[in-house]
Structure formats: C-alpha cells, structure tokens
Image 1 (cartoon, rainbow, N blue to C red):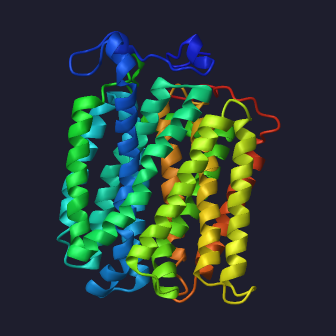
Image 2 (image 1 turned 135 degrees about the vertical axis):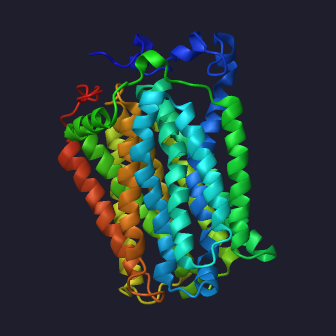
Length: 442
C-alpha cells in the first residue's frame, strides 16, 4: 500500500526525512546538513504549539472565581468560558486539518496564530461574561491550528515506535505549561486582575508566532498535498471514521481527555472553594499533578515503548484512570467520611499521572493507521477530544460549588467509556498495527 512517502526505514520505526529537507524551497525548507542539527529546535517549536492550549486554559484557572465575581456570573456560566475555548479548538481542527493537507502546514498555522493573538487581546477588554465567552470561542478556533498541525508534522516526520516516543517527548515539553501556567496566573493576580492574564497570553502568542516564522519549515511537499475541496475533505474524514480501529483509538483518547478536562474545569472550585486553599496552593497542587503526568509520559517514551506493546500500556493507563475516578467518587460522596484535601489531591494525582500512558499512545496508534491523510486524521483526533471535553466541563458544576461529586461522576463515566471503546472497537488482542486502507478521497 502506498504509505504517503514514508521510507522503508520509517516503517521500521525510525525517522523519515521529509522531502522539503532534501530539496528545500526558499524559505520553506532546510538543507540536509542543517536537518541534523534542527531536530531539537523543531521539537521545541512543536512543543510550544501543543503547549499553547493548556497555557491558554490553565493560566486562567486561578482567576475563575475572580471572573465569576467581577462579571457578576454564576460558577457554571464562568466555566462556559472554558467550554467555549475548548469547543473552538475542537471545531477549528476540523477546518485546519484538511487545509493543512491541501496547502501545507505553514500557511494555515501562521493564519491561525495571527487570529489567536488578536482574539486573546480582545478577551482582555471584554466587559461582560457573554462577550468573554464569544471571544474565548474565537481564541479556541484560532488556537486549534497549533494543535492539529503539530500532530500532522510529527506524522510527516516519524512512524511507528519513533512516533510514539516523539509524542512522549512533546508531552515533556508541553507538560511544562500546565505546571507553570497556574503559577504564573496566580502571580499575575497578585499584581493585577484577571484581565492581565490575557495580556500575558497575547505576548506569548506573538512570541510563538515569530518563532514559527523563523524555525518551522514546511514538512508536506507539494506533490503529497490533496488538491480537492470540501467534498474531498469530507470524503477523507468519512473514510477515516469507517476504520473501526482508528475510531476506537480516537474515542478512547477523547474520553480519557474528557476525564482530564473534568479535573481542569472543576479543580479551581474544588480546591479553593470547598477546601479553602489559596490560589497559590491550588497552583502548587496543579503543578505537582502535571509533574506526575510528565514523569509517567517519559517512562512511557523511554522505557516502555519498543519493549512493551503500546496496546498493553494503553490498557493499563485507561484502567488506572477509571479506578482513580471510582476512588474519587467514593471519597467525595462521603463513603469514607470527610476525606479532606490530601486524599482527594492524591486521587487526582493518580488520575493525572495515568494520562501519561493514555494520551501519547492513543495519538500514536491512531496516526499509525493514517499516513495518507495526517492532517485530517489529526483533526478528527483533536476534535473528538475537545468536543467530548467541552460537553463534560459544564457537567462538573451542575450541582453548584459546594460538592465535588459531579466531577468524580464525569471522570468515572469517561474513564469506563474510554476503556470500553478501546476493548470493543480496537480489539487489541486481534489487531496488528498496520496502516489502514486509504480513505476515500485521500
């Protein structure tokens, strides 16, 4: 089967040198000698692109109670500012992914980054919660470009085991964002109000745009681009979704992400309002949980991938996520009495850490089947994750600010659902991980 330009070496799990490196176009590629030294730079750029969404959401988390008070809204309405951003990132990927398969990776990415900067700057001046929700939606739509194109670039460059390892490396880089973002947000709130957080995000967006212009070269040569329009893009996506195994990994990853996002949306109120922690304490706990995710992700990439089946590792990760959710539900519902902050924080730490096994492996296993349409496949993976997360986020506040039970219920349902999708659709005991038949229109 044609494999979208991957070499025999790439099929064995090594890096595939993309055409723009060997035959550079002015301003869009690098020469072969430079490619040997550009790996770290490209990794950092892609890490920055994947870090931008968590930075956009997590830096804002300590300010959620302040936004609620300042704009005179309820907690559930304030959480819609997160939902709007997440929904925008989901829908934006459906547009940007096929665009990148048709026009290359750089142009859609740069357009998205410019719009992201403008939308973020406008958020800083939003006078009402309704306008803030609207511009957070636009911010998410534009920020989607970084997410989907970063994954597509990885698929352009890597295959097999090396792709899984690279995703774990990206998790190390992008995982720094959840650690430092709430800390930065908490410190910004010391010197200004919540609007200052969006000013900082605007500066970060400008800096990252300049870095992309300078360092990220085109990885999809013109001869491998799709020339069709909307009909072909829809046909490609329809063909991808018809692949049962691809759909299984996509849904499993999306539901696992929703369990993570239930924590992201609820934790500011759970930690600060229910347990009385300060924004700085909340930021510290959030950072510790993120360290757990990064550490497990590196164990996955450096020790497990290539030695243990990715399906087995993924099964363990999804099982631990589900069990951690059950433990949190038992604690928050009072089965063991009043647990206090520490046991609940420990349960959240275990759940977050297990994401280091689930997230890189679902991405890699799904993309391994789609060398012919990496942009569209990346869009579907991201859209599923963000749409399911957007549905989950308002549910965590459905019973008000005084209970963490809805958060735990959402985590249990999403964790069990991800495990069920993995087992029922992927059938890991049967499936050999080969590329799927080319999607219609690909």
